[in-house]
Amino acid sequence: MDYGLAIFPTDQTIGAVELGREAEDRGFESLWFPEHSHIPTSRTSPWGGRKGAPPLPDFYWRTHDQFVAFGAVAATTTKLKLGTGITLVAQRDPIWMAKEVATVDSLSDGRFMFGIGYGWNKEELAHHGIEYTERRAVVRERILAMKEIWTKDEAEFSGEHVKFESSWSWPKPTQTPHPPVILGGAAGPKTAKDIAEFCDGWMPIGGRHGLEAGWAEVVKACEVIGRDPKTIELGVFGAQNDPAEIEKLAEAGVTRAVFMLPQGPRDEVLAALDDLAPLVG
Image 1 (cartoon, helix red, strand yellow):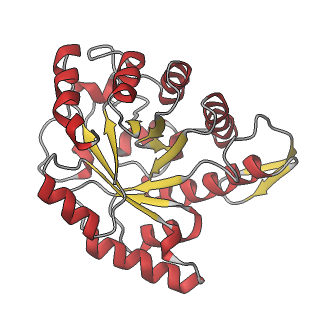
Image 2 (image 1 turned 45 degrees about the vertical axis):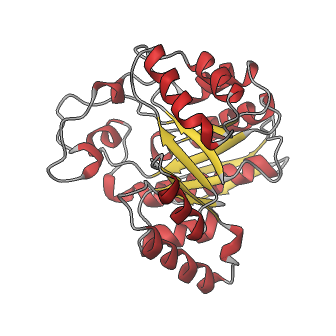
């Protein structure tokens, strides 16, 4: 089992660069940063799209840009893997995003993991010109288009949501054919189909999304297209610091457990790292 850490990098908690060094020094495999471009003040969408959810914490609208933050962390670490947990693909331009992913992977010597998601905040998506009901199709095309850019010297793409003529774009990612694409969220039939088609991993949130049922959907989707489900890595966000629970995850085929750090000051975050460190020690 690999063990990672996740935190919303903001101006109110430990600095991203220091956290990266401290995580690496303690032997953690990876560090994951979520993102939101902004949060519309209308607050019509409940937190996570869940009816009856509590008020949204303000760190959701204080996040640093993932790729800028990871560029800084890459420069001050040597082994720590860097994962977006997750990137809101529908809200980003795919041509620029392909370059950002490739740049961080290049600067980190192949340590980047591209965690992606569809997005739950309808107003945030709307501000980016994306209809909530179209976000899945938009994400699919943008990932497929980025794969063309990452793997071809002259790339082009023609879809319903993404179109560009033959183009050059460098750098290419250090990892071949590209950094792993890891989808977060519950895996119903539609999500499982996307995982089977264009992803290298699935990482639901532990305790919220049914792991066993979701994985069964992924396996079925793989069977439809003739893909070996063993080529898809299984991980969990929000794992519990409980040896018995971690053992259950391992038995279910999970190979990466990511723990959420507190959105507190430096000393509180470092104390949480110390509590988790025996897992990797």
